[in-house]
Image (cartoon, rainbow, N blue to C red; front, top):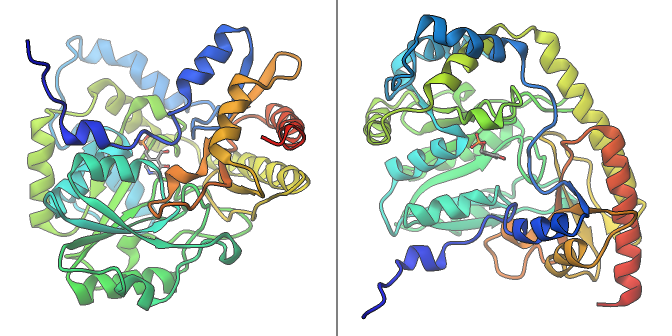
Length: 403
Ligand SMILES: Cc1ncc(COP(=O)(O)O)c(C=O)c1O
């Protein structure tokens, strides 16, 4: 008997930085410990009533749950076109394909813009799944490091040109960013646009946190930039906008017809995104504007609490993010991976502990992020306050035990 061999991809793919400690969290729960999860961008805000009403009404209109068109149900495409028009982005229906969440939009983008061996330039720290998606596509990430001290804003043109090679296919960025919270200025977006144009690259913009900016910051879209029709690709999701992570609906949009044709062929292979969820999300266009403003204000309060409490902890520091709902915190002298595991295996106060994401998984450069953790401030204030109290106690105890 000969054992079959696993693919290189299957063996070497990185594990999601957000989910790799899930078995340890389950073990803690099995011991009766309540785990307050700050590891994942899974908000506790309620999904709009418009979504649930449309889902409930579905069987009366359509008693058979059929496939949707591969590009998306027409009513969802119409509502997305309207949503973007209101955001100052003019898109024709055929310039948009509905995807299974933002992650499939990222996957389709990489598969359509490059082949195995291709390179994607991305500022680090980045959304950890970029590494996994690149691995699926057989591509590699070429990181350009950004720093907390600069608010994770972009370095100059030279830093990008230093990593451009003949294999480079695209620039990929998120603004507002996960895990950085950075909201790039128009000048930064213009720099990326110039690089894309000058070097014949796609510019892939992950804008899933568009609505979540604080202290008056606003996030410009890649599709607001002039003269980039062949280069600019918008990657989006309703997971965060409508607090509907489980709907698994996103989209990909570009004025580049050839690119969208390739994306449509990819979409046809997986038949369609979930039809029922598409019907629900199509109705969310009618969510009253107050829904978004309430959510945004709530995240800003959560951010303020978490940033203040983190900076009060011994040897812990972080910047106030301008957008999204994450914070990267540096923990001087602490091995973040060991600390995050220890929180789940050896620490509890009154039957509770906290789950965080170790920072290294958000970087491609070896060694970076080892003393950083990423927190998602997606839980109600009272829970967050409790989590911060637990984390402060954990940092003090971990240091005392000098692991
Ligand atoms: C920057 C960024 N892009 C994409 C996604 C994926 O979103 P989705 O749940 O729609 O796949 C996330 C999720 O956390 C994210 O943070």
